[in-house]
Image 1 (tube, rainbow, N blue to C red):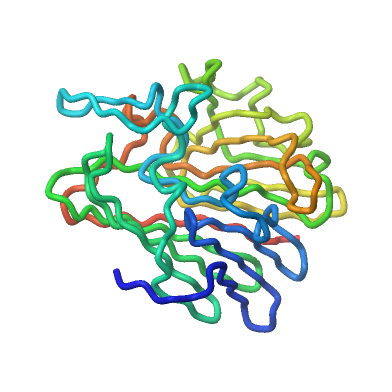
Image 2: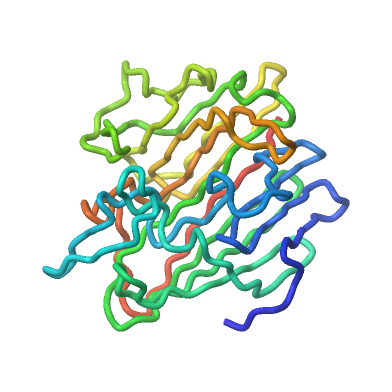
Length: 306
């Protein structure tokens, strides 16, 4: 991949200026998305680093690996502990990686990086992330190619914090396209799965964010059709986070003191599409095993619908 030199925080604007997208090469993270002046994600484009993993692309696994270790072909692999308070490896290998900008146009930006047998993950991948905007929002497509000589386990995710203009997030209504949830232990590792019917984890009908679980792993059992999660206001305004069927798992995380970049904090809601649940490297659940030379492409997006 041959990088092109562009500004550190490139901005892609759709024709007419209706949609603005700001991407930070660090973690190929989505830092701002507005449609008609309405923010659809928490704007963090003026803040350093990746606060709260805002908008980060998660690969080659999303979420946690228990004790930062896993086993493959009879060998134990030790990952870096990136969540020291709980002893886990969290959110993959690219959270601190600055992607190269490969292409940028009027309505799209493409970023890429490489994974080359880092400690605990003895595989070789090329990762390319494409952001494309239209008059309603943005589509994010991640392509992974196994450029190594052996099969590689891969799972993908993203970490957007959703927002609907200036309305308090906790007063919005959330629905999640999920039939099952996981019981999480004190380290946020899933231990078993259960149907959401009749439980507080059933978010298929809209519920106030303030009354929804603050930290949850959800999944849709069937793999047919696009998943659609919604965040809406009483005045009819609504956004959708849609995802390919490969993103059957969703992580919810409510941050009660998210930094705004203006000296204050607010409640923020991460709705994270994932192709596998937490701890997938250890359990194997949801992992995609890519053969040598195989490419995998999956997409999700955010759009304003009302």
